[in-house]
Length: 406
Image (cartoon, rainbow, N blue to C red; front, side):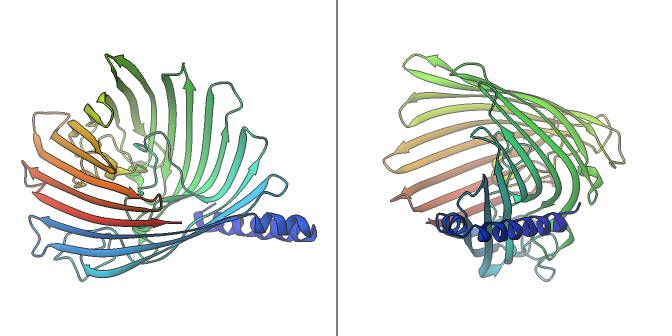
């Protein structure tokens, strides 16, 4: 079943539910009027200066988001979310063929237009278990493998079915069957949607109050991009350790991946992430991470994460949205400091090939953010990538973002 059919089925089921509830009179009115509406606006200026382009990119975009969640009737509820992205200053390339006449600019992947971001029905078996059918946001663990790419104005969502359960003590289980990935490039270009046959299994076991273990298995058969067809098996453990008057947050993750479905290339590759963050005092922490996406056993096929929220990893300049053929090792240090209402983050990355001795470059990332009265937010953010090879040119990016949520 492709994404359009699944979304249509969700709408039909929603309509049927509404009709059935309407026959109940008061029950329907209660469910409808006890719902909750939401509205948010996110306006952002993005500047990109990248070697190899004739012009710098200057993008001023704004996203209006409207949503509504119904009340509950006979354990059923529904949710709908609509987005519209406006271009205010459009001296940029929207990417993926959205701006064929603006190739002189670097890409800022925020295409304009309307999007039915989410439309789903929830059914709660009991207080611990539920099923969701339709177009939905799926965020698993830290979104390294499955996420929503929430940084971009047009979010990545999924058409499918998700079953979640916390019925077992200290255990959270999730299974999603996905038929379509609605990507950030929008509906006007072929790469904006991928038909898939994907099974996403994720579990989280609380070992104690401080430690948890999360095994996962993600099988993706992508009909539109065969090299995105992968099978990934991994485990993630996170916890905290006492360190004097402070604490150290620890993370260790390992995964192995091979080809799946219609992938024309046989390969296997590994993933490793080790991390520690030391909280020295309230408002100050120092972190050190090593993340490695291996080069595959077959040339040109390295470890890949086609459903990830990629902007959150390997630097905010987004130089490594596709894993290099030789894989990538990312050694990075993070400083976080809170001063009053302001949160400051600084990160230094050193990128190199996982196989061989090649260096890709270094990057410095900085952000300064604050929240105002719970409804508003301001963010200043910058990334400076210094490349060591022509394949990864020097790139500087700067953002100013304002958000309002109601």
